[in-house]
Length: 620
Ligand code: GCB
Image (cartoon, rainbow, N blue to C red; front, top):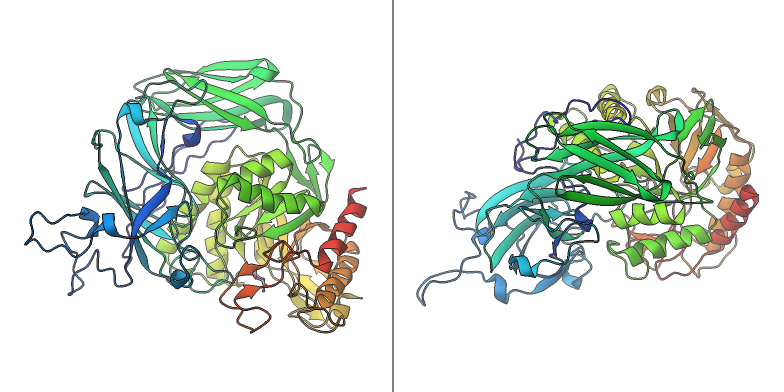
């Protein structure tokens, strides 16, 4: 039995050019947390970021009494003593604060490895004159209000003025609650119980090689919309036609057919369509566009309006497909010069949250000569995917279906499906994203394969324009031969492969003369290889954890992979060192995975230059 109720999320299959598909709901969803609003950042409203009061509550005392029964008057009530005799044993207004967005672990030393519940509270006014000015072109009408959360790691329950709004599971994707008619002009109390206790049935589950930071890790916003508004829109090239734009739009609150205008002013292209009775429409129109690519990351303003509502997105247009073992971007064969990265802030550690954080990380990837990044092991924040759009970096985006998951648990599958649906709904318009990945290093069992096939089917239905992958493992099929034969390969478009020849598997020289065999005729992206090195630790190339060992491993790996024709890209592990409680070695790791090409303070290790030179050669 789950303690946490699951939010309802309708995953709309928005097939460009096709008819809007039937909304699909994960089997165990409960009607508490509706899906996030598209275009929320550009809408009128107010940011609720900043200092929130917090109570650290390892015993869930704010929710349960001493018999572990629900307390009718828990912390969510944000109560104050009514008189001097009244007993209230908490007070948000006198409790310390944490910054939102941000993880709790790196804001206070005593919370570094804290896992459990933290209660967040803040007060806000909702008078119209407290709203920020609508974005240029946005309609001023503010008939409805929503509270939108960028992400709460790992799960959240939300109360407004003592009333429960709902709950959300999954630490990396947005969710929203409608609060129309529930706001006071002044002094609204918003309370969020955030919990990140690891559970065997959660996604991710008990064991990850990264520290899974807790908290309100992304921004919170009060969003205002007209009565009928554009909830979601997917815009891209029509399949098989680089001279047509196609997509779908879904209105919320429409009472009957409504006209929707989609316009790309710089391309002088525009179409008007009418929605069906449910407020949904598919559209398609001719347009002459410069295609988006890493060399030329051209983005266009796309304006969508319906009645009093108007939204704008910056969208690039490109195609991606496979042809045998080739990957083709805009019809041309491409090699993915990539690097993996965690969403961990350069310089300070902790969750990366801002545009500056995203640009610092992706700027390093550009310096390395990359045209591709693997955003491991969960959906990164939207600043990251938007920065990738602007900088011209192709993206592998994944959900945290990692290592050991409760493959037979229907609720766990529903959770994974929802996280995937929320990721695709949020980022469906990002040209940079070419690959959705459904899992990392999962065991080859029937239950696992069934589970991942459901996710693959979901992703194909929700987004037929992108390629599907997963980071698979290999096995030795002879003394000098390695085989990639995971049966899931048959369901994927691109085979992701994590291999650690030279680190967990022998010494770097083992790469020489090793042959690779794949049971599929599909492109392979080596999604991980690498070695730990402590920046500044110098020794000979056979000394573990030295920069020289790591650099030597990169030389041997690059020489080996060059000889495998089906390898059409790579994203070695990893751009920057990252925090992991699985890495205790004193004086070397000290709680950090040191496989970064760059230390967290920005120091580049020798292997950085080896890979940069190899990528320069490949770019010619
Ligand atoms: C892997 C995992 C990654 C780890 C890495 C390592 O295969 O996918 O999450 O951090 O190996 O360093 O061992």
